Image (cartoon, rainbow, N blue to C red; front, side, top):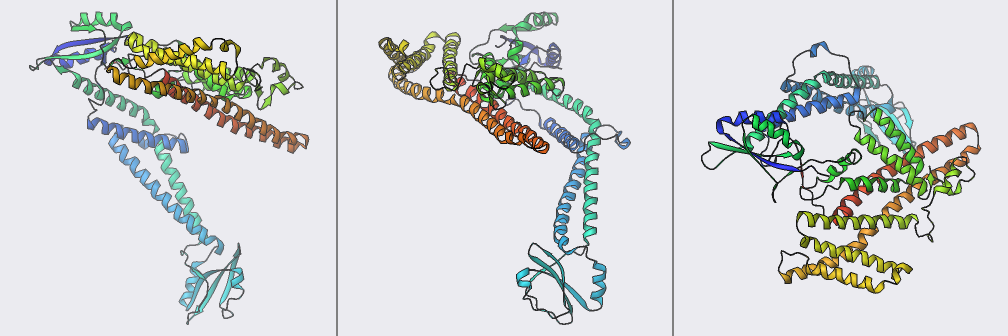
Length: 609
């Protein structure tokens, strides 16, 4: 649901503009009209905000790598964003250069390892006496037939079919039919030591960044101040002159109806000239969602797509009803529901302490998965409850499985997924009818009435004719007339703003899309069944792979336990991801489309000092 809004217009003189904004900011209830695109943040403020964001990301990245560090006394200085950004840039540049150097050292290490720890100093002494040492590699088969004068060749190593050897030359150059290797004149020990030094320097760089954590609070205060300045600038730009004189100016904003009485008293006390009115068609009214505690947990899902505009319904309560059902139907395993419930309870005491809504949402999803995982097909960590009569406790829950996979049973898992989908589609059309009748006119709602008649009668005729369901067979004639009535209503009233000829043409196209779209929309809900089956089958496969191991030794049993944990863990993760995404797709595509959801709402943000 949405909170009702009232439009408020304040008058002030040019001289009183700043004082007016100060008072409006103290009220903390007026959303000033105008979009951020119309009134962008000044470049100097946005630049400072970018610097702060860069500093914060660098510190958080360092904390993720090395954790919290002890305080550095040398950092006990005032927070200067520009200076800190330069210091961070210098450290990050050093880390980047050291990382590149480590890559080079890694390559040198790889080249040197087959040759061992070469003493370049001794080779230098040989070179001064006229002995040159050259390094070569050659496949073992070719090495056997290599012709080198005796006493001039020495084999250093043999690795993976390659021979590493050196050739000693005094005076004349020896022709060697092999790949010559040019090594960096560093010993392997020196390279490894230098590599460790680079690692240490990089670690120290990250620690230096992490020690700047003490300035995150100052950074937050600085950002808050900049955002207030930005908000003040935007608000100031939104105060516009009345007429051409420029002496009188006005400010337009929005206030929730529940805050209106308190605001009136403050405005009257401060002697403002103001006018309060209802929203008009075309106004960009901000949106403040107003839902009960349960539905408020699903508001983040609503915002994930778009907020509703002021002249349509907030669909959050419907998301709160359908999304948990779809999620549980996709996850489809009571055991996984227990895991999700436990994780949610732990999260509510740890990571969700500050914002409990995601934790409660996950808890609802976990509890409903336990329920639907039991009644729908009945699986517990891949074990079928219908086949678990001899397993203690699990055998008891067999009696609660009433949505089976039996094809001859009308309410099997496949059919139920389609039924739930059809119900959501019909509900979406009903919502669109109600919305058009309330916010536009009853005439504008008639095309959707025709669509509803088409859907209901077409489904009933299909069930009666193709599925031979007796309750619908006897009403074939009236159902056909209802279908024709829906088609006629949709064609005749498709868009009352169009001329009759164009309206009828568009109406025929609309009817075509209803028939073709209905089939596609309903079949989309098969994914609920398919995802549930896939997670159950994968769980069963994990069990079948692990079960023979429990008949062996203790080590085999331990291996079986590990296989079960890892296998079900992976299956749970994959199923969880699919169970989150696909219900969102059904909500934002099929349901929103049939409810004719437009969106585009702007969130209510009262101006504050």
